[in-house]
Length: 360
Image (cartoon, rainbow, N blue to C red):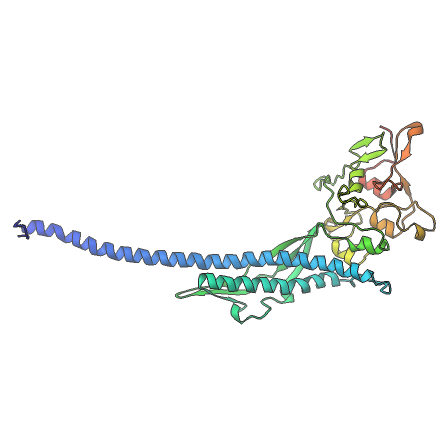
């Protein structure tokens, strides 16, 4: 009988037993489920910590690489201001080494700062290369961990080798593994080209910007897409010569374009090479020279190809203008500075698919 005077038969009492058991089991299930959720949440934080380290390493390589590439251009340009220095360029193979050596400390500092911050936020302990991150002073990676590769003209990759040990520790949880290979793309767009500045005897400055009309899958430049007889211009050749459209009211700075025929890579330009050191011609680029900044050194011969590396090597054989117009209106095309005839070698006229004369 209960407190209200109800009597329970043995059968009714037996019905309560499963309910009591279920209640006890449910409490255990809830406790177990909470434990599983806690483990899962902890695992998520540990996993996200690892992925954040990878992401920070990639971003750090990108930022550090661009800073190092810019500094490399300034080293050459600033050395050239010393007139007693006959060769301000990097020695053979040293431009990549300079960029790696200057990328490394910035990358290390970025990764260490990021990991220390993540330790504070997550309560985890982070180890890289089997050293606790709080024990590092300035180096998680070494120069032997980094390489540089290039697949196109307007940037390169900073590559961190895979297999470097990493460990993230939480109470009752440890993640141990290795970093994957990490490649960070570094753009060189917007950097000054020391090759142009030094070889023009500090008379011409050019900034590396990409010619927008080139179609790499067709290897087509569209330099003679349109003929303007009235203006005696070829479009888009004239646009390529005009480059950034003279936004600062300075001399126009021509665009750069892929040149698998005989161009130079960014690193070749830092080392003042006449031919590329990279066997992959998809990494080569060229630009044009406006006017005739070295006319005094050409012994009065202004008929020099205005393709940059041909101009600086003094190519005058089989070089001529591009004529536009008919009859008395036939005139040689001038460059976008409006001060000089644009000359080009037959080798590159053929390569670009240009004619010697356009009359419509």
